[in-house]
Amino acid sequence: MSTFPQPFKSSVSHWQATNRGTQSLYGYNKDGKPPAQADIVIVGGGTMGASLSYFLTRDGAEGAGRKVVLLEAKDIGSGASGRNGGHVAPAHYLRFKSYQRPMPAGTGASEEEVVKIIQAERTNLEIVEDIVRKEGIAEEIEWWRGELMNTHTAGQLEDNLALYNDWLAARKKYLGVDDDAGVRFVKNKLEAAKLSRMKDVVSVDFAPTGSVHSHKLCTALMRLAIQSSFSDFELVTWCPVNSVVPKREKWIVKTAKGDILTRKVILCTNAHTHNFFPKGDPVGDFIAPCFVQCSHITPPPPFSGTGAFKNTVRSHHGWYWMQTKGGGIVIGGGDDDLVDNRTHEEGFNLFIEDDSKPMEAWTKLQSKYMPNNFPRWGEEAEGEGLDRAWGGILTRTKDTLPLIGEVPGKKGMLIAAGFHGHGQSRIFSVAKALSKQLATGRYDTELLPQSFELTMERLQRCRTVRFPGHEQEGLVQEYVNVEQSVWEEKASARVEVRAERQRWCVIM
Ligand SMILES: Cc1cc2nc3c(=O)[nH]c(=O)nc-3n(C[C@H](O)[C@H](O)[C@H](O)COP(=O)(O)OP(=O)(O)OC[C@H]3O[C@@H](n4cnc5c(N)ncnc54)[C@H](O)[C@@H]3O)c2cc1C
Figure (cartoon, rainbow, N blue to C red):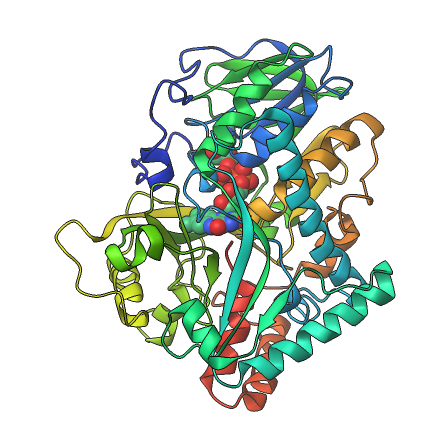
């Protein structure tokens, strides 16, 4: 049963607030009714649903010559996709170990699989770049391609270099590539301090990345699907799907505005996917909704114009930010600080679906981050500093990887959800692969790592894993404690435990 309509009004992100004009799709076909039949129905109009619509409606794709319908419970981009940090940042060496660490702290993937997971995110960046170039939408979606700067404090450089070299060796072993992976380190302390302008930074590294106006990206993809001359594509907004029930070889997609009969239905419903499964079902249980927040900051003059950031940044605190075309800074991070400050418990933001209000303590942290960490930030004038904070609901999954493919035992029902706060670095590969899978019936291992596939074996393997902060009695609790205590023993202080947690939680 759907949790829509929601009994609250969602907060408004910077992206949503700056895409309200006639080019936006606010209110698009709001009063429309779904057609009685369709070949393919997509549920959910975030970036996942929009990019799948885009790929399905290209010449020769599975949706060409067919009726494709997308049903969205609210306006498009109203979920995580319209309220994120704007990064399209492929993972690199920093994820190399955490993906190998056993669940629940990590993914439990083999070294070879981790190399493939990271590589798929690089492919994802190229896919976005390809769409942007082909469709000529770079300016419209404020596409930026450049380098992400990771900052390090004292002692981190050696660890990071060792991890980087391990990752390069594994890439060589499993992919046969022998290069620097486009990553460069700045080890000189003075130079790193100058580049970062940040307190305590002694070295940095740079890696290939992208950033985007996320609401405009979602809008542009959806518009391209609507305009397709190859498919009969229809978007119906404010049309929550209440359930999907089988009817012989087909599915009835039930909404308050009417039902659609279809052969194939794809749930792109991210944090809300559990609504389609009974309580306790291993698929529904696999994905947990998780509240996080971002803010928009108007920088003072030293960080404007010639002083504006030349890169997107992920700091040694696990925070992340980018400077928009208009010069405002969109910043995310702070959930770990709330736990470290002991004002909040581990897992405090899990299983929350209400994004109507940012959390006061969190907003306060985000308002202080820049002044506290940049000595040249200076005193903020009236109108400078944090001017908007918003909440968003992303997902955590049991093994930190997305759930992609056909639901076991439910032919024709597919899922593309559970991006573990890192969707824009995965969604485009997933969408391209899924549009192929809808034609061939086979999961595409050329574009996607095997470990993303929704299989019975994976569900079983993860069945007893609990989400951090939500452990329950029994075996799993013991397992969590053992893992945790071994890790804590090794840690020189809370710092290392925190670093590990950040890797589980990382968003962007
Ligand atoms: C604050 C924040 C910062 C983030 N920062 C980044 C970042 O910088 N980089 C990055 O890669 N990722 C980031 N993420 C994560 C990223 O935004 C998500 O991984 C991605 O947007 C997921 O896209 P989606 O389409 O799967 O989900 P969503 O955008 O959540 O879309 C799901 C859609 O399904 C609809 N829906 C659900 N149930 C139903 C139903 N029953 N009927 C009809 N419609 C339904 C919802 O209304 C929603 O529009 C961030 C997320 C948040 C919240």
